[in-house]
Image 1: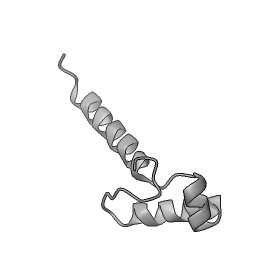
Image 2: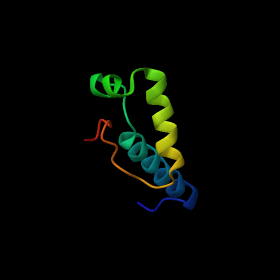
Image 3: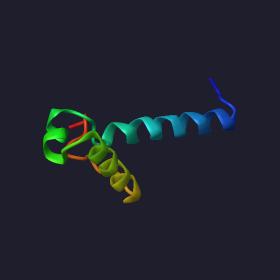
Image 4: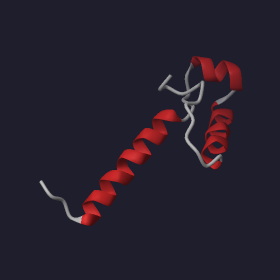
Length: 63
C-alpha cells in the first residue's frame, strides 16, 4: 500500500516518539530509590531529552 507523503511523515514521527519515550527513565521502584521522587524522575527525563541524542537510560523501562 502506497501512503501519501504526509501519512508517511506522521508514521515516522509516531514511531520516533514511541521509541524515544521507551528509552526515557520511567517511574519505577528502582528510579524512585535512586532519584528520590517522581519530580526528580521528570527532571531526569528533561535532562535526557535535552542531550539531543538517544541513549538507553539505566532507569528506563526498556532495559
